[in-house]
Image (cartoon, rainbow, N blue to C red; front, side, top):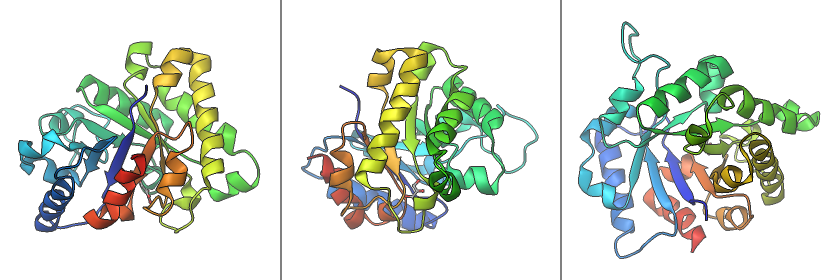
Amino acid sequence: MRKHIVAANWKMNKTFQEGMALIEDVYKTLDGYKPNCEVLICPPSYFLGAIDKKYCDKLTFGAQDCSEHTSGAYTGEISAPMIASTVAKAVIIGHSERRAYHNEGSEMLAKKVDQALEAGLRPVFCVGEKLDQREDGTYMEVVAKQVKDALFHLSDKDFAKIILAYEPVWAIGTGKTASADQAQEMHANIRKVVAEKYGQEIADNCTILYGGSCKGENAPELFAKPDVDGGLIGGASLEASKFLPIIKAFD
Ligand code: 3PY
């Protein structure tokens, strides 16, 4: 059975003290409770070196981005090996905010994925269509192309380490959520595209998360869909009391 994951994308939120307190809060809310999913927390990278290993018995950690370079004169950048030298085991790559505000296209994202894999991190690779692409009916091809262009150079062994996250851009930070049926339709198509290249077994084992205004109220319906394997959670991951119901949606 493929892995279910509820992942928190804190984006650029929380001071160091607030972030450490939130990790402690999330950890405490899991006290005496065994989630039916992996709980992955992706805070701003500068937290990662300071996170106590004691949290890793219940939580896994990841970064929100990595450089496409290994090291060198790239002021402000953080490399995959740097991330991997902390508690982090994963890294989000290709979030629509990075694609939009930092001009990240498939060629660059493919290099970031290679960097992450080389450093032993699991890439959480984000895809998703914009509103006009949803409305003009091209959304399936758009998302299939994002998957193919950045990932289909990978070997079977490497592709098997990828976690995919479908985040329709029109549902990010807008309060709008794809309906559970819209998410299922897209996830099933992504899995089909993966199966055509890598075979049914790898496709069936690939975790595909839904992201975009996912919260406690809609998570149970979304996660009940057969091809939705969890969520990549923005705003609702910034308070333990809002995040916990999403984790519990797998109960
Ligand atoms: C959101 O839920 O808004 C996200 O972008 C999660 O990555």
